Image (cartoon, rainbow, N blue to C red; front, side, top):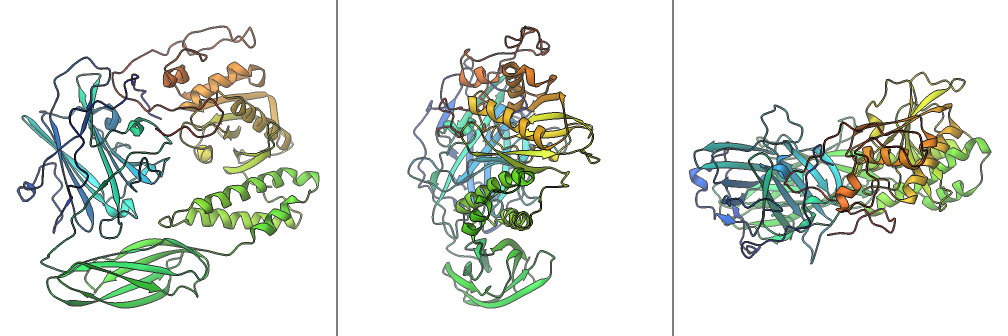
Length: 596
């Protein structure tokens, strides 16, 4: 969730200043890569200037509308976007893609209504060098991921009297499988946030999409046509895998698209390397390119390759730049036999391991069922391999989790409903079961799980650190299930590890900061204290635009205990007249919000 919370009134982003532009206007093909400097090159002046279909001032005081337009183009390597704003300068704010100035680009699979297959890329100009949110992949297929774009993708800005330009080059390889030469349909939406004065932000978008400020929801990606090249002054050839993972022995193909000034035959080399970087497979194919754009496929015979992660390197001729892509080959697994092995009751000392393995089995098979053809699945391959190794040790009568100190995932069987619920755990490096250790409970933020929370240090290393999932991705740990999960996760850690029961601290980051306050409020007898690393003390009311939930702005006596006091009184209430991400924690207790 944002470091600085931004306010959105009940007014949805549906104020149209004109009809939506036609999604059938094709994006022009460029036979070159534009110079990236924030200035529209003279060679690009003929690109159609497009007007945003939707505009909103949210709950701002009326301001003059600042004209903003955009232009689109592409080539085989990049999507090109140029934004032009009738302003003398850039308004620099954190998270300019919501607070202004900044942009969001949605590229995905268009569907009849909303789509759950997309990339949301965010861009924020900043005066700070290496600003971490300058260019990021924010969301991928509904899930919040927040990871870096590759160095191939970048943007630049330029200001002069009366005009500011924002110029973007986004590598198609950062948005696989989407590429106009291979993907039958590509959906797009572009949003620009313009900051005005100290607090105001106005919003412009190609199409109305209330999900612009939501997390974990389907999104609006309207089909966008792309013009295919009709002629070229040199050979243009691009290739990509038809799928990035397979089962042992399954067919994998390389799709190739090309066009040339005259009929030309070119050698395409395919080299596959294993995880150690050693070549294990090589294939050459003759590609015939003509003055007419065409596609073809090359079958890769990978039947002799053992399971594992690989890198597929393709190169046209000897002078072109090699291109690489990830490929994972999964081994066959007898999942039914694994279930049967875990169905047998082990000796009491292995019951905790059994619970953890049952959840791990459910988790890996669920992820396998949802894996898209364009996902490499390398991390999932490693997770599957780890599960198989731990299951083997378990069947031999050993605890596969014994001796682990670094962050790892365990699980318990919930007394609430009998499901297996995960939590992440990290022990002190010098953990000794004959000693007692304080316990730090860390609640995760919105849109993510607890799985990676303990990869960073939250204490000085002398604490046992616990991060519960809490069955709560967006609900601020308000539900009965969330509070039960926190309580049961703590109980499970106390049962299996040497916890000082009088030294338990509840803490949290972002949404988890409010969750820590709420949990301390609900169950103060469990904790010695509460620590908020980051969080809004009235977050749930803020998101739901109500006043029905507990708020922690002021010092007050804790109703649950009658004695403990809340020490967050220095927080200052601030309302920014800008949009925010709104979560919709469902009242039914389900783990996912309704889509917009």
